[in-house]
Image (cartoon, rainbow over all chains, first blue to last red; front, side, top):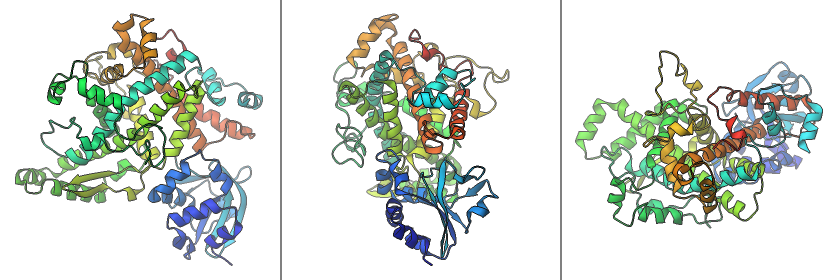
Length: 133
Length: 429
């Protein structure tokens, strides 16, 4: 099996995310044994952000890394594990609310592809970039 | 279009401010969309942006250079270096160009600094005659943020960490190098010095916050003049987009001593403009602040002042502008600053109403209040976009969450002092 980064790279629909992870210097971390649960926004999710948002983040690496680590949770948590929970604490430190009452929602994002297994964790694909607050 | 979809799915709100909730749900602002409102708020943004161009430069100058000077008599005397400091969001070399104008100090500001209300004379005389930009207003805003503290974000908790104290300690020792008196005082009262550095970190925080807002307001004014902003929601949406575009701007505190930079709050902390500056600023300055001395007497024992700081309601969204209009009161200082830079169309407008020129400060204060209701609307819509759902979301459960959010926000304006009801009418001047 491949690791989280390899899967994201080969999928093709996470180009912005992959570039951001590379810029933020998080590739090594996400290739480490972990395990991690990653909520991965698609390119379309990044497209929904108003113009300039990604540009400013790309210019400021620690701030970019903070947003990215809000999408990562320690441990390998599959959809069935998350069904028992109503919130998670991200690597960034802020909480991520989880709602599995109807479908599978992570904060204001909807999971469009759950449980993509990797060597060092699991990826849930989401349709919206998660922001703290 | 959006409104129809929303209304078709959700029953009407039963909130006291239901019409305003529905307006927010349709993508509008708390301020009604009329050409008169639009003209007032844009004119005021422009008049606010010019002194703000001084405020942010001077706040950074104080945080980065004046620092712990025990006799900071000249802290409002901006050196050329800071007047020419490039705004990161204007000019050709901008990180992200928000304003089409120049990156250095605004020409109207420079002209005012030279002549003031009187005539050209040395800076010191302008200062002593108080014919200058009222930097005391900016410091009052900074102090509101420092005093309330703990309004979300990671900046404020960081000020209590050992890491911060160690950084501050290094900066203090470097700043007072070769000054045994001050170093001795620091040894005796270390906490007092650290607390002063915390205040200076808030100078930096607010300076970096306003560095963004000045070009945003200038650009809005230019777009209005060019006919590109035609409605209040368009103005609000420009603000919403700007909030997102700049959200990731770093918030830090650097001190410059003898050519060396001391990072009291390094950029690597990852503090962001949105979470660590903008949201705490709105909470501290728009909503809370503190009762201004000399405006009205409050009896704290009779519960006339809320027990919890979070319930304070002395910000611009609640202010009775009329009694505030007294010399030396921070909001009046701002009104006085804006008076110098009003566009002609606003001067003409104020002259047609109330007592014309004689109560222009009050009239522009109320326009300012209207304009800040639009900024607050933009913050509410930006938070809704970031944390909740699109206004045209097809899922009724999502729309309900949006509504609950809007209603919770407007609950803060139920108290009688709030001016939300007043700004709905054009007769409130």
